[in-house]
Amino acid sequence: MKTDFSPQEKAPLSSLDVWEDDLLERYPEPETTAKAKEEFRNYDNPERDTVREFYRLNHTYQTYDFVQQKKADFLKFDRKEMPIWEAFNFLNTLVDDSDPDIELDQLQHLLQTSEAIRADGHPDWFVLTGLLHDMGKVLCLFGEPQWAVVGDTFPVGCKPSDKIVYPEFFEANPDSKDERYNTKYGVYEPNCGLNNVHLSWGHDEYLYHMMKDHMPESALYMMRYHSFYAQHREGAYDHLMDDHDREMFKWVKLFNPYDLYSKAPVPPNVKELKPYYEDLIAKYLPSTIKF
Image (cartoon, rainbow, N blue to C red):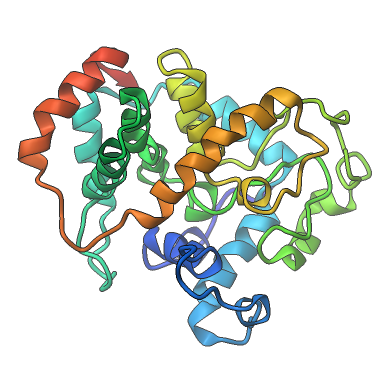
């Protein structure tokens, strides 16, 4: 497996927000006019070149072995230990001055999500999930390439669904030639349950393991699967889910609109909100978190 990547291979996107903007192209708000599937699939549009390159790299290098290697490395959580609010400041260094479309830092993005959830009267653990859901993006600050941090997630170890964005790029993935991994079920059993399935590596899985001893199961499903669009939007992997997954995915689908549609150009007042969120963090999480 190739491990040394050029700067272009590590960061084809101008910022991580480009991936989220692309999600809005594919999954616009229900009340807006959705683009035709054919228009989305217009790969000749030069505005989509960086997104295409991002997914080419993602689909080429996210193999079963790659995911195992990343889990063995990062799930030791031996890189940093800090309070959550300090982690937000750390995460804010991801803000990219070259992105002209948004001036909000990462914490403000997270606060917009959590405040939208709070305004709708959901439980406080749900509000906290909104605040934390992108915390795993600190992987970029540990040297991980963008395509191993964000992007739509999908199961590795079995044949990828054609419902995944840019499915043709999987042809370059070594697993597509490996008979262990290139069938419908691959290394899995029918309806084995997603807890037994390895998804592509990124900020979702990283955060799930960071929080799995502290947050309710519903919150953990939201964290772990909020980028699994091939399932919660396209229903492509029902054959791997069990009944418990299907029940819990109601929470994932409830969370998704807050994740996608809560961005606004007006920043939340961090100073005013901080005391509430500090108390909420203290209710569920230890004083420091290991990264």
